[in-house]
Figure 1 (cartoon, one colour):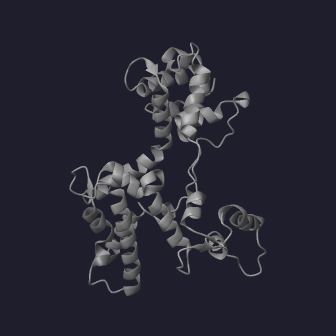
Figure 2 (tube, rainbow, N blue to C red):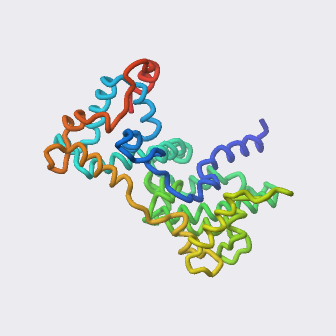
Figure 3 (spheres, rainbow, N blue to C red):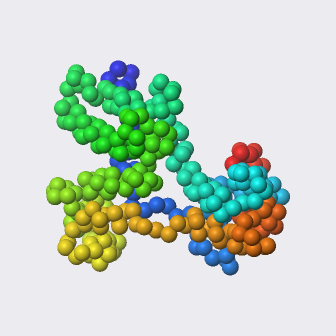
Length: 315
């Protein structure tokens, strides 16, 4: 493979850490795709407590195996080892399960960026790994080079925002904020700014209806407008454009992509404790949890896959 092609492959492989589509988040994922209705089952609770993928694994296990693994999970949730699961511990656990995909993404890219293995990632390390070749004066494709310089400028701005102490070096937490800014309150302004820059085609700093729809849908010749596009136009006019001036400004974009929502993890922790706490002391023991185990985890009485059991010995 020629050096240029090899470097291009490296560039493409590395920059998937921050692809354009990850830079804009229209909503945060819910705890579960199921309706939260205990009268018709506990699927919502299972996915909230375990995470969606792990809940599927438990559904393949015998009741005995599910309860055994649940007991091990309870030991991990009880971080202060006092024999009780508090609301704070359960709330942290549920949020942690929902953030697992983010942590896996960060872990996947950490090693390739932390080149000197000091447990931190400096802006220079990130820039050289991602953009080093394209800053080379020998690179002659001016059009591409300009676009990569624009990406570099944007990434540097985001990195500096994530770097809370301004030392030019990102801790794992700060690097997580850089890759997934939608998860951090102090990164809200960057998420909003990048969203407007992506959608605002005429550069007036606002988003009009045409730009709003154009970001989602490009009509083909002779094609009639889909119903969902008509619905989105209605949402723009009736809900998104709060001051009815025909544009979305930064405040309105914030309400759209980063709405102030109820803390679902907090509500779920309270719900599980309420349904499990038999002595009404606002905390639950392993015994109480195992007595109500089928609210926390699922199972399948027969024909569960032995191969799944082996593959998922560690949650």
